[in-house]
Length: 260
Image (cartoon, rainbow, N blue to C red; front, top):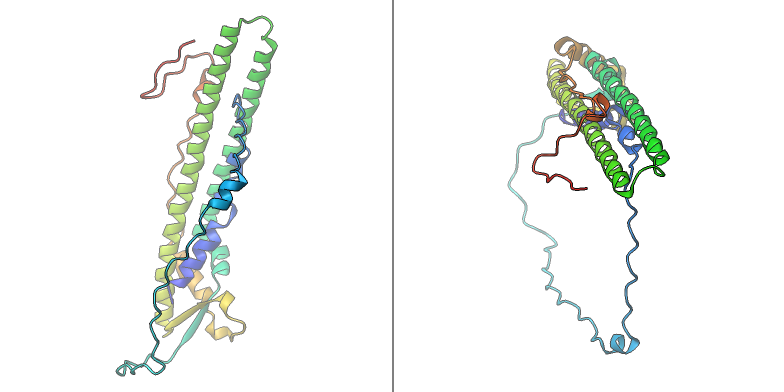
C-alpha cells in the first residue's frame, strides 16, 4: 500500500498546469490549402440489398459448469493486524520544496515559450501582409516562390516551438519522477518508524484521529532528503528566420531542393 501514494502524487502533478499544452494549441498555420470534402458514398440498389444473404451467428462455445462448492484451499498464513497510517498527498505537495521548485521553473519556461510564440506569430502575420501588398507588382512565379519560402520558414519555426514544448514536458516528467521515487522511500521510512503496515491516501478516509496522520512527518523527511529536483537546462534555439530572415534556408536532411 505504500506505493499508492506516489501513484496518487503522479496523477495530481501531471494534471496540473506544469504540462499544459495551451501554447501549441493556439498555434496557427499559414498557406495550408483546405482539404476537399470526399465524395458521397454510393448506395447499393435495393434489389442487391434484398439478395444479400442473412448474416449467420457464430457458433457459441459450450459453457463450462461451475462447481457450486469448490474444494477448499490449504490453510495459508494469516495476515498481520492492520496498523494504519494516512498521508495527505496534496498537503505534502504544497509543502514540498522540490515540487514547488519544479512548478515555478516549468511555469516560467512555459510562459517564455508562449511569449516567443506570440512574437513569432506576429512576425509571420506582418510578412504575410507585406507579401499580399506586393501581389500587383510581382509575377505569378515570383509570388509563388515568396509564398513557398514564407510557408517553409513558418513550418520550421513551428517545428522548433514543438520541440521546445516537448523538451519542457520531458523535463517536468523527469523531475516529477524523481520526487515520486523519493516520496515512496520516505513514506516507507516514516511508516516503519511508526510500526505502520498499511498506508492510505487521504481521499479514501472519511474520518480519522490525528495520530493516524503521517503527512507532517512525511513532508519534513521529504524536504530533508530532497530539497531540489533535477531539471535539465532548457535548450531554446531561436528560429532561423527570426535570427536572419533574409538568409537562405538550408534544405532539410534528405530533402530535394525546390524548383520554381
